[in-house]
Structure formats: C-alpha cells, structure tokens
Amino acid sequence: MPARFLRDNAFLVAAVSLPLGVVGVFLLVTAIPKWTVPPPQYDLLLQTTEYGSTNPAISVGLLVRDEALHATVRAVKDGYAPRVRLWRFDHATLSTREIPMDFPTPPGDGDAAQPVAVEALRGRRVVTDPKAPDGYQVRTSRDGGPGVIGDIFGMRRYGQPTAIMNRGRVVSIEIPTANRYEQPAFVGWIVNGGRP
Image (cartoon, rainbow, N blue to C red; front, side, top):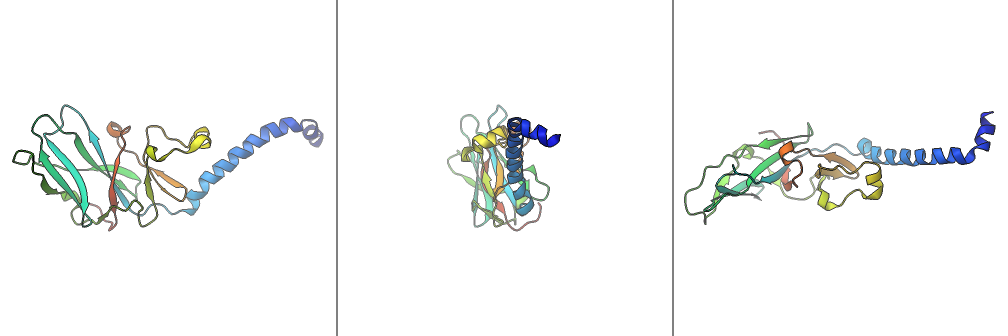
C-alpha cells in the first residue's frame, strides 16, 4: 500500500521532499564549520562613537603604535566632540564589555594633541593585521551580506552588523543596546592574552 501511494502521488512526494532536502543541505553546510573550525583564540578591540548633549569637551583618537594602544586627546574649543567608547570582545566567553577610558581635559588651545596611555590595556600586545593569528577576520554589514539564499534561510542578522569569521564559521559580536545599530570600527587584536 505505501509503495502504491508513493507511485500514484510521485509529484506530491517530490514537491514535499525536494524543498526539505534543500533546507537540510543548507543547514548541514552552515553547521559543518562549527564542527570543523576551532573557536576564536584572541580578543578583539572595537570602537564606537556616540553623539549627544553629554559628550565631553575633548576629542579622542585611538591608534596602535609599536603594538600598544595609545590615545590622542585634544580639547575642543567650540561645542562637543563625539564620545569614543572602546569595547573588548572576549574570545573565551564570546561577550563584549566596555574598556574604561577616563581622560582629563588637556590644557591648551586644542590645537596640540596630548598623547595619553590607555591604562586598562597597558602591557597588552595589540596588532592591527586584519586577520588574527588564528585566521579570524572582522566582517561588517558593509563587507557584503549572505546573498539571496542567506536571506531566505535567515543568515542575515539585522541590527547585528559585526561578526568575526574563519572558513565559514561565524561568531556574532554583540555591542550593548545603546550602540547596537552603529557600525563598530576595528582597532586591533590582543595577541598576548591575559585580562585587564
């Protein structure tokens, strides 16, 4: 009886089984990298900027020089500069937390940048190579989406534009709600481990 039903309804069976088979293949293709590619081994530093009425009267720029994170601080003469926030993505917990940066307003007219150490990361080696030593790279929504098939199967994550990727394995990076829709900027990879 089952064989006769399948033979008599071959079109119906194909119409149901073919889409299920395609979905199964795509699920398998997205799951294989999670099984075969090791998790990330290095912490990542990102920065965001915010505009608001409570922004400080200083301008902060972050840069990596000699594998150390530095900040340049300038007084803003008229108005307010955007607030720069530094985030550390912890590879062990896959979570993100803010690194405190409290800089005093530098004396002077604002034309001269005052170099200031980022104390919370003193002694940490930071490299700016786009690819970490373990092969992971930062990807943002500007780097291209998953395409039509990815959109159909829910691979695109709206409001979550940043992730790190390695040979098909994708690890999303969650920035707290206030910065969720802002495009974080890459600062560097912490390559000597340890936690501040």
